[in-house]
Length: 153
Image (cartoon, rainbow, N blue to C red; front, side, top):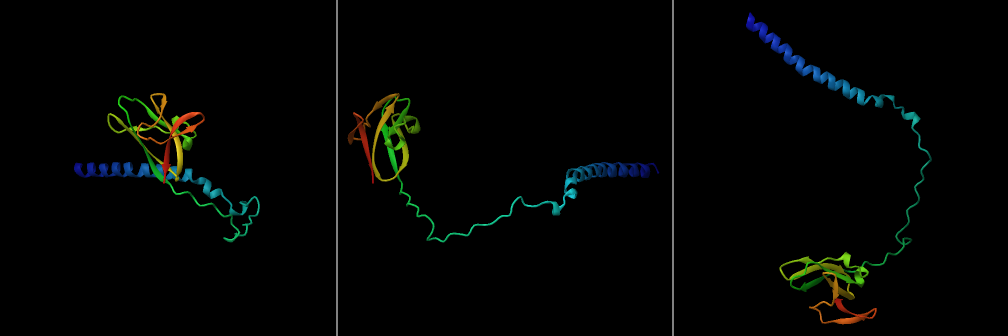
């Protein structure tokens, strides 16, 4: 009989362990969602009546200019011992902070820039000094100084 009493006691304890948390969880859920029962759909009214404007036909829509086709221009500079290489040009408003080149090996720095076809003037900034691109012989004058020129086709 002792074993039967022990089993009944264990069954009661297991029932209590399972049912008490579920009752507490159920009460918490009811309390959390109690606001739902207080809603009255008749009291919710729009602040103003909504009128959807008529759709314009394609002929009435403003014509958008076509987007320029972009090409990837590769800037590549070979210079030994450089710590920072940047490009400033008319395509980034002469802001050298806008385009940093990435070091590929001990001497090569590169960057790919999406640009529409055209002619672009630029300078290389190597460790704070503005220099012409050593790999590009095309040059022009910009604001009284000599600059490199890149033609994107």
